Length: 450
Image 1 (cartoon, rainbow, N blue to C red):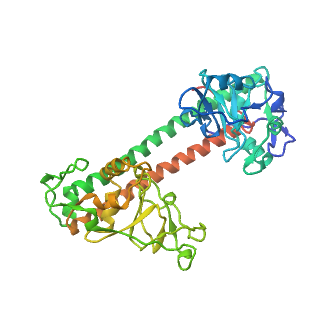
Image 2 (cartoon, helix red, strand yellow):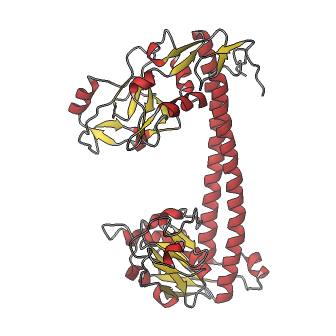
Image 3 (cartoon, rainbow, N blue to C red):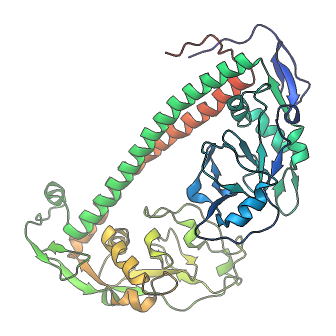
């Protein structure tokens, strides 16, 4: 839908704000608040597992306070002491004023007792001068965020002072018009958010389907029609594997010890020396959880790597032994290095691609999490992995399973990418709509509620 512009505009005299409707005013934040902009305590209190929720920058995301991401809890005594300076109130607006997420905004939507730390600036609107929802949307606009970026300073990290925040400009229409704009944006962003939520649910379902497909195929074999496509007899008879986490497997498959089927590389090299410094170095942070996808590549020199690394040959399976529940595994795209937190694996009597798909199954994940829980630092050590019993189909079936899963997961990945792209477009539209309405680029006063 295309909305009309206002009839006349004037200069706001704020470079990053641009023109505003002729009848609007422009005011610094400090003239729109009922109390001066403030922040939480600058001391570090003792943090507990229970008590009064203590909110900091990491809990501010998507315009909300995520209480699952709070710093922890503080004592009732500290809460009372901190509340003498500032006590959260329904409708207050927070802005992150230091760190990587400087500029993020959230509104208090609960009467539950909590407190905030110093990285958050608290803005309490004077309801006679500004509608809090109008200001909340404005602080998320592209123009305001540009003003924040132009105003912050850098020390060890980016930050913006409360004195600077108080002087940032806000375009101000009449209170009824502010309310109309806020109501419009609440309604329209709500519709967009509902659609985004449905698409994210679809993405989750597609990812679950992908994992289920891998787990079923690697442990139960190919569907009958697909088996015939590869000139294989379908698996119709099954036997107990004798392994609780694995269950039944096709009658013609074996259960073999991992160490008999797979070599785990030993011996590390110095990544500061050539030719190793020029080789791609893969660490757990470069691999996407549960998908087997390599997210990015960089050489050992580019990563200023120092400690010993393993050599991986093109086609090797690289498996992260740290935090097994993340299921980080990838095929080496070329001769490369991998970090000491990963194992390069190479099949002896089993195909590398079958090993790769096996390590992405729910069954292997169940085993790895169980084994990792037995040590203080969740990881799978070499001896533990060598003792693993794994299902092994005949080689022709291993190859067919690998080809089939490559093909089918690629289709699902393409669908996920398509839906992901739609989510990004919706979020971009949401942001553009907020910016256009809240700064007067479009006139939404006559928009119906239908």
